[in-house]
Image (tube, rainbow, N blue to C red; front, side, top):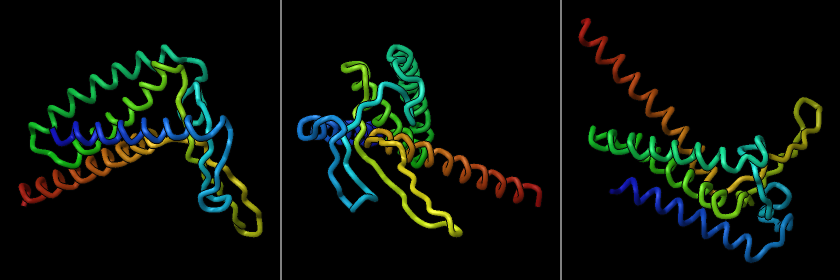
Length: 168
């Protein structure tokens, strides 16, 4: 149940933050948090990450339903196995997927608002890069995927160590 609570917390934080953005900022309005580096910018995305696959609402809805079913199945399986990191990662993934799913299903677009701009000099060349605007659900999904990779690496190292002990 703990991992479903994690998903619920992610989902609620994501939806509340999106509601606050829609309620208090007009579309494309920005508010500085840390100068030009970090801004809250009201933006809508009808596609996937980085704005790819625009206007594919039903595709995303169907894919998300399939992914959510898979996550729930795998979450139950890994929880029964007594694992901790992987179910935590899956809880983050589930909450993020459901957060963006609700936006797409109800409104046909996802509310994004976290904007980062990187300005610096690199070997004498000026860099000015604005990272694509994203939301809390996206952050949970990325963190969940990263933790899945960490879990896979830790599992591989554990298996490798056990294999070395068996051969010795």
